[in-house]
Amino acid sequence: MHLPDKQPDQLTDIANKLRAMVEQLLAGLAPCGEPQQLTKTDDIFARQPATRLLLLQSGQVQSRHRGKLVYIAEAGDLLGLSRSLQLAGCQLAVEDAVTLLPFERDQLIDHVNSDPQRQRLWTYYLLCLAEFYRHGMAHETRGHFQPVTGFQQFASGDTIIRQGDEADLVFTMLEGEADAIHDGVKVGEIHSDEIFGAMAVFTRQPRSASVIATSDCSVMAVRKEDFVDLIEQQPGIGLGLIEEMANKINQLNNKVSNLQ
Image (cartoon, rainbow, N blue to C red; front, side, top):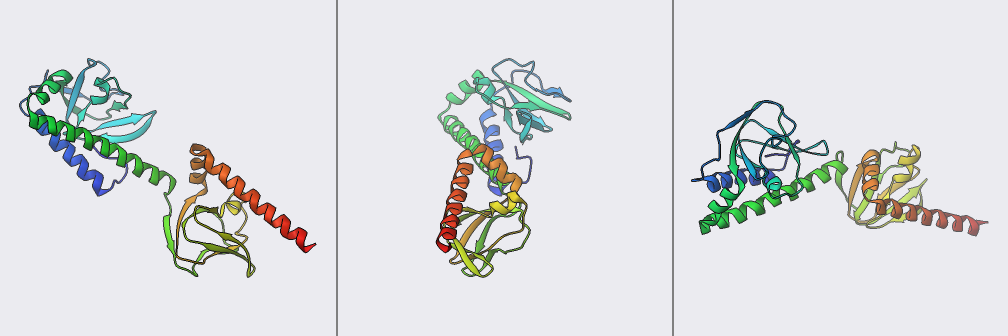
């Protein structure tokens, strides 16, 4: 199986190991029926018994969750394990012709338990399967929230944001520090874990100040659209941003009062 988009080599290696282990686990176990041919269906398990497993022999099967494509199964993948254990799983659909070989869950478990080596292999298979899902989820999250620029590195003295430029990215200072400079005058400081550059993005105004690194910095940059999605899923980030902006406004008010 593989992710819908380009996936890291590490995930490809895990997927290859999973198919090799399936072949070893099923060696010597007879299928519970003849190969099944499907051409197009929204659910390959629609007419299957609750404990049925299917070995994909040819073609591709799409795994979808709430309509979203999660991964694509390929020849050699064993399907239906979560369903057979009455666990929440994805809907498995096909758009083109596939060939599926049926196996019975309990027969597979008995086959595994009959040999200590297969038991160890089964444990390793389940761990690798969980690892594929874990890395796949992490890869999808990074791709969703950092599709354009992701992580950037700046040396001390580098310009992260330039005053007057168009604003289309929101930044988070992961490591390091920087100064905010307006017309050559320092108007603020940016420290680790602070979000900056959001005001101009949301007001659709040019950058009101430059941001100059005062140490080596690691910065994460995301588009406005992805930042909005991130706030929707992590409301605490939005609250922190509001608190930070309120503090800056309060600091500016104090400066104006002192000048008067």
